[in-house]
Length: 443
Image (cartoon, rainbow, N blue to C red; front, side, top):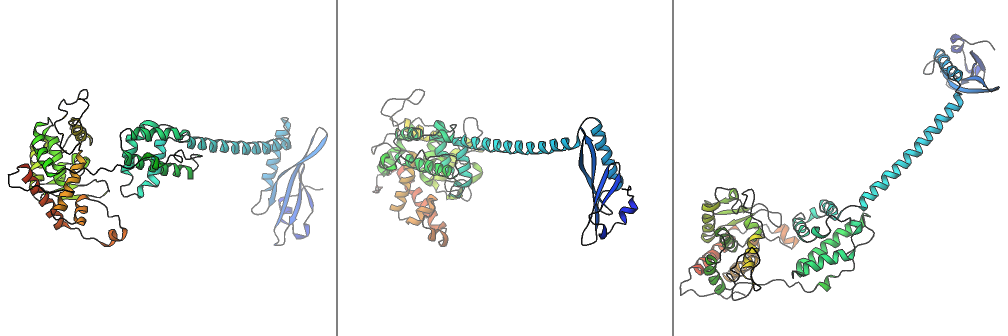
C-alpha cells in the first residue's frame, strides 16, 4: 500500500468509503464517507509488543474540522517515544481510564461522606440552634415576630438544654423544664412554653432533625389550672400605696416607674425601657416604639403621668434613658422594679444583700405585682366610663377578631385621651385624698 499524501486525502470521495489507506510510519486509515459528501479517515497506529501486533487510535483526519496529517503523525511519534521508554500506550490508556473510574468512585464516596457529615451535623444541632432556625422560618409570622417566645426560652429553656444536641433531648429533659417552672407557680407560662417546645420539636420532626417528639407524652392538663391573676388594687389600697411608697426605701426612679406605669397602664418592661427622645413634653405624648405586639404605641400623658416624667428629667435627663442602668449604657433591667416590689412584701425574712424593709409595700388585699397596677388602671378606667374598645386601644392590645382588625380602623385618639385624663385625675385625687372623695368600687 502506497503512502498517501494530503492531496490524495483531499481527493477522496464517496466511492472510497471503506477503503484502507497507508499513511506512513505504521499509520493506517479507514475512509468514511457519509451521505452529505463529507469524507473523513479514521487513523490507527500499529506497533509490536512482545511479538504481538497491537493498534491504538490516533485520531480522525478531515479536510475541515478534523486533525491534519501532520498532527496525526506527531501524535504517532509521541506514542512511539512512549513505547521506546517501555510504556505500552494501550496499557497506559487503559490505566488512565481505570484511574478516571477510580476517581469517580472516590468522588462518589467523598460525596457520601459529606452527606453523612451534614446529616451528623443536623443530628448534633443544638436546641438553641434549632430555635434560631424555627424562629427564622416560622415564628416570624407571629404578631410579635417570636420576641415573647425568645424571652421565655432564654429564661427557662436555654439554661437547661440550650447547648444540648436536639437529637439527645428526651422527655425527662422537657419534664425538668416544666418542673422548674411549676416550682415558681407559673402554670400559665409553663403551658405556653410547653406549647412552644411542642411546636419547635414538631418543626424538627418534619425536617428529620429528630426521630421522636420528646414533648409528646407531657400533657398540659397535668400541669394544672392556669391560675390567671386577677389582682386589682382597690382605691383604699391605692391611697395606702401612695402613703407607703415614699417610706419604702425604693429609689425615687423606681417609685416614678411604678406611678408612671399605673398612670399610663403600660407594661413595666416597656416603662423602664423608655428613652427621652420618645417623650414629648409639649404635646404630652410618650411613644413606645418597641412593644409586645411589634407595633409602636402612643400614650397621651395626664398631669399625673407628666409630673413623673418631670421628676425623672431632673434625675436622669442628662442620659439617653429615662431609667438608665448603673453603667448608663442602657435601660434598667425589666425585672429590677418587680424584684424590688416583691422584696418589700416578703413573709420569710429578708434575702441576703437585699432590703430589710420586707413589709414596706404590703397592702390589705395581699401580694401585688407591678402588672397588677396595669390591671387596676384598666378596671378604674371602665368604672369611670371608658368603653372596652377604647381601653383595649390604651392597652395596645391586638384585636383578636380578624374581620374587626381589618375593617375597623378607628384610632379612638380622642376617647383614649379622655380615658387617660380621667384616670390621671382620679390618681391625683387619691394621692391627695380629701375627706369628701368617695372611693369607687373596683370589680
